[in-house]
Image (cartoon, rainbow, N blue to C red):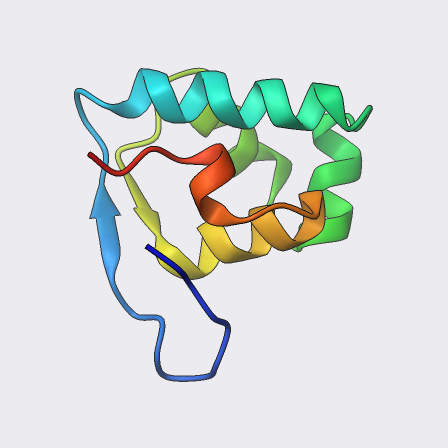
Length: 86
């Protein structure tokens, strides 16, 4: 799955439940590998630190694709590298 950031195209919300552990582990792993703190990722991506913290702590209930794109772009990776859509 590939995401772009064209206005109006990204409107889907991904419900995260059972697979949220995969999301948490991969986001934190990639962020730490890049040597970035949650605060730095929040500043670079425009996604709040609170949202990043919720994703990484398994307490995020839903996640918009535009948030996924922002995080991936800020980390310099594709969405597929940090989120597993199975």
